[in-house]
Length: 268
Ligand SMILES: Nc1ncnc2c1ncn2[C@@H]1O[C@H](COP(=O)(O)OP(=O)(O)OP(=O)(O)O)[C@@H](O)[C@H]1O
Ligand SMILES: Cc1ncc(CO)c(N)n1
Image (cartoon, rainbow, N blue to C red; front, top):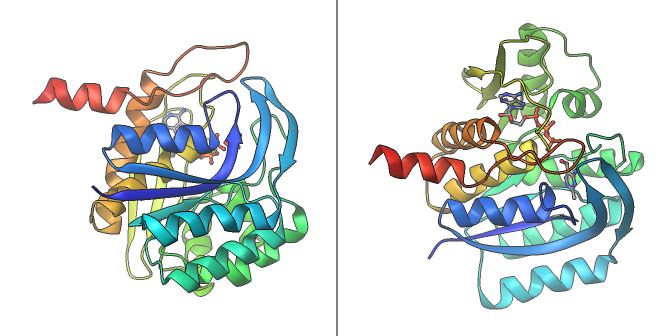
């Protein structure tokens, strides 16, 4: 059994964070484990409260997993502060983990901050150089790389600058693109660009899309897929999950984690 770990925040509403990650791992048939960094009181309307855990609590969870079960791939989501980023980076080095996916979560859809501003520098210096792939959305890429992204050329330039930070691959996601008909995720491995396009689905129910996408990449890496192939599967997974989204609550409802597997079994 292949094993995937998520180091992220809990979303009580179940659509993003740890909950989205574990649902995705399950659907893609890897064994899911978690180290929680913060508990959020959250629903489809936004984040009502954030309770970060101590560095010790985060490290102890990771240690328990490393000492006994092991990890084939891991992702990080909401890390909240520089001390947690530092501690997670140390654990990655200590355990010699290589399949590292960074979803540089900063701000929830309603505007709540999920990463302290001063932690961006720790992310750049400590964690990004250890990772196999990073999956920023456009606003996150703009903050990390410190440039405006308005065009495909800008996305390409930002992708190159990510590689200069020491990460091996990058996907700059297209959820925030202005094109009303299409989303384009730009993949770059330091050599070649790949443009992953899909039909933009006209829906408000996109809570947790970034978490689900990076969790799907992590699951596929845990199973031994190559990075680009893992990203392609993740794109199919999130497309199906948004197309069959679940209209729950009164705000941004969640995506549908069952959709991809349901479709795959129909195709067989
Ligand atoms: N309306 C949409 N239709 C189709 N694909 C979408 C749509 N919105 C987002 N996606 C896809 O979902 C994935 C996540 O992208 P996005 O840019 O929304 O991440 P995010 O902003 O980090 O998400 P979140 O913060 O809500 O978790 C990408 O593959 C993107 O192309
Ligand atoms: C806990 C958590 N992680 C990530 C996101 C970003 O979608 C969120 N809203 N909540």
